[in-house]
Image (cartoon, rainbow, N blue to C red; front, top):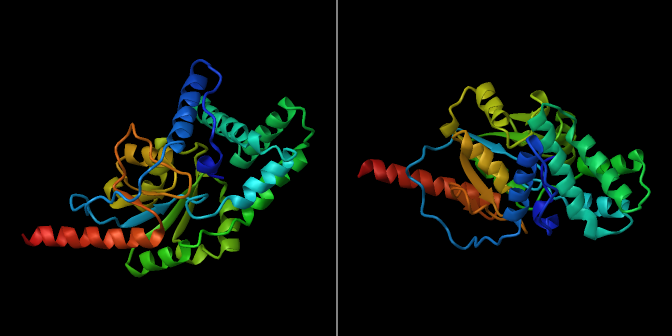
Length: 286
């Protein structure tokens, strides 16, 4: 599972203070939560970027970027006795411990971390919740998330334009395989990458380098597409081009460089890439 649900669920800020890896992890959590409480004006379209090369490969985040998380939100809220005000606490706890595990050299499947976080929130608020029920609230709905309405048309357009398409997710390989099968998206992807192969979570630099190394491409020849500012920050840190897709409730993080593309849906991304390519060709002829 990716760090999705941010835009729809992150409504509170702040976290316990710690030291060492915990301090760093919670700082990153605060960045994630802060970024998604800000509003992005997607009407401000950038000029076509003729200074960067046409990407050879487009790397997609999965949850919330491609798949709609609404069913997962409902199941988590139900597991917490209908107390939807606890959803941000559950999510920040899950992000907290995934980052702690990466920074401290430990690894559990993201679904396991989400299950543990849900049990912790339930226990701290006097709600009885077994591990079996907590797992069912997360894992089962995660497998059947539907794609956003623009996804199929956008992926089809990008494939027709000759782009290689892969995915990179914090979910396990098994989970993303089931997700793509149930959402009927498998046909559009050359490869599906999961952080479970290196046991580090995005936005750690090694997660993006893993994809680049496997495909034998340079960072500037890849484009990372995500609905999460923290994911794009990680990709940009290793030199990958970035595209922010403004799903409802998501926003850019203003303390880092603006992504190369800011779009509302995938067909718009396909059009923006065409426009940038045309601008580059025109610039070469001048």
